[in-house]
Image 1 (tube, one colour):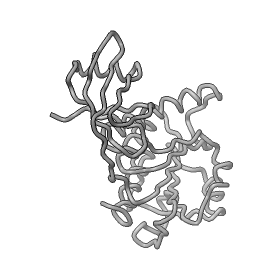
Image 2 (image 1 turned 135 degrees about the vertical axis):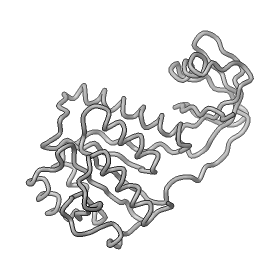
Image 3 (image 1 turned 120 degrees about the vertical axis):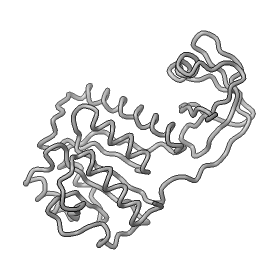
Length: 242
């Protein structure tokens, strides 16, 4: 039986006990219906897995005694930073979730001309908190012990100041493929993907003017969530550990 993995923000050490946060405790006791004596795998983003046993369950409190820690080396060798145009509905969540599984190390949501999500600062903050939980849950599922960084949503023009010489954006009319590019894989690899409807002509001009290289994925036009995930998979295949 697979041992459930639970993310916690608390400090973890062997030969110690920890009380799980309310949401995690509810998942363990009410959803998984675990009881005292059952094993759990905990992680907090420090690169280790911590294995322990449930020693008590009282109301919404679950106490776990940690008995062993193990280092994990399942991170992608590539430092991929995905700049993703914010999409509507659950498409953005899908991109974040699967991006975590594929090894993306940083995410920056982009607010662009064709972005269909219009929020005030307070609602952007709530959206950020929700997306952070999506990332943490994806790490629980895929076995990553390092939590990818989620940067605040930023307008495209402001984000362009962060461009490096290792930056690529998806464009269906580009002549380059990832196989034809000699990238510096030891530094950050930036991948820029437009929202539904893509980048506008003006935005494409901005991106290219700042030195971002256009890249295409075959002869077909891909949806925004497909383009991002396919591109990350190709980058891992060409330069990474696939």
